[in-house]
Image (cartoon, rainbow over all chains, first blue to last red; front, side):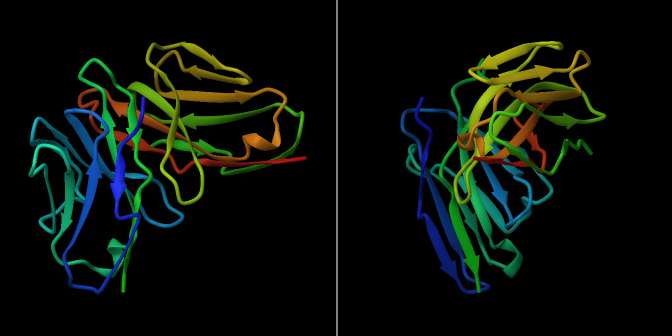
Length: 114
Length: 112
């Protein structure tokens, strides 16, 4: 099955600015996830989102982060006031359904905070 | 805190050799996935194992889930240069299978 697509592929921003990363599902999936990977480090879970609600979030996902699916299609991750340490690859993943445990990842957005 | 330890971190071997990489934890997982990740790209799912002791084969790759569902191994037979890459294991929590924990990966380099 196809994964999701993500936009932009690369985002450069100044510290303190807001960024919105987008995940575009190929078909009408209900389960979405955001992960991040700081350069050279492991992939870290941020948040899971089911049926337009957060189902689980990690300690990384603080008040600076938010997720939503505003138009019922795109799934977005917003970082309100970016910090240097937010520089990372951000991956969106989707899951086929409750009975399916596999998660399929998008190509990622490389966020660079200057 | 659940952790997945992968070993070795780096492995460089000659084409045609066999190898095994490991993924270990003190925690029990409801399932475990193996991914392969190329530089600058997202992880690509190779396999999911669910049952303790389960063995799955994907061409020359053999994946095994430990009986206690705390560990897993990936065995590659007759490695080829195309197998070069970063191999990640990721476990789903017993209670909340939405949250996947990744290991740091094994970087494999197959020399022609």
